[in-house]
Length: 126
Image (cartoon, rainbow, N blue to C red; front, side, top):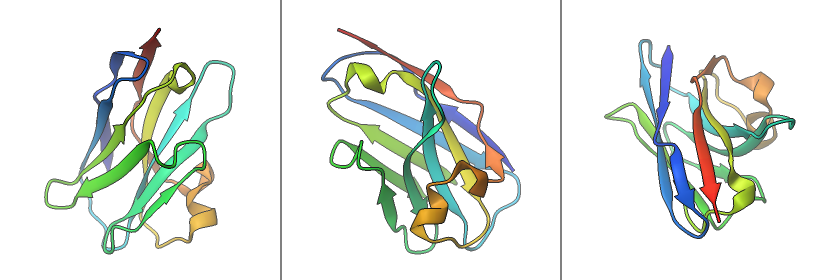
């Protein structure tokens, strides 16, 4: 499985940005995909996850209400809509996939995921 994240770039605080993650290769019936981010000097942080079959969404409290995760199974692509972007959102954003059906607490852990994209950088200007 290969994951290709894209859509990062320079955005002004308060603006919106949409990230994409295209998956290719093997597919799984019950996978879940997620977005994480990592700022310089910080741990990789869970943001949101979405299951394949039911498209159930899970969010970290830090982004709930501002970020929206979605996926198009026909296109094997996941998205992260980022609204009201803040300076503290500046980080490298990674997409990830686990082929195994998982519960929320497991989905928040980076160790759950077997496949990772290369990351896309989001820079926020004042």
